[in-house]
Length: 129
Image (tube, rainbow, N blue to C red; front, side, top):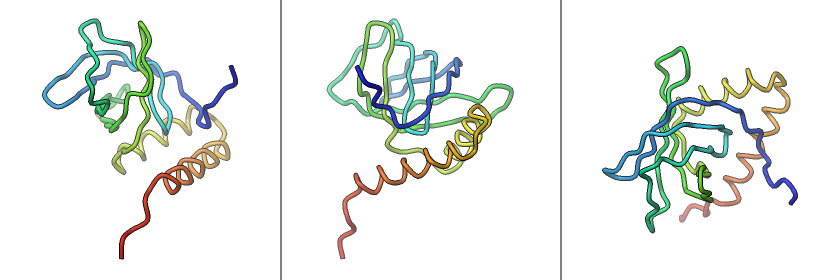
C-alpha cells in the first residue's frame, strides 16, 4: 500500500486528553504532525456518529498546552487516527517549533507548511461578497 501522507509525523509519546462535548478520555499521543495525530485507543472509548473531537496535550518539560480540533479518520483495535482541521495560532507555533527541532531540516518543514496551506485553500469555500 503506497504511503499517502504528505506530512512528516514525529514520534512523540506523551499523555493526552481526547474530548468530545462533555465526554473526556485519558490516552497517549503516539505521533503528531501539522495535519493530524495518532492516539492509543482508550479502554473505555466508544465511537459516536459525531466524528469531531479535540486533542489536548502538554509539551514535555513545559506548561505549553497544544490543542487541536480534529476529525476521527480511522480507528483500529489499539489506535485512533485524526485529521487536524483547526489549531490555534499559539498551538500551531509551538507544534511547528517542535517539528522543526525533530526534523533537523528547516527546508522540509517549510515545504510541509506550504503543503498544509495549499490543502487549506483547496478545502476552504470562497468568501461570499
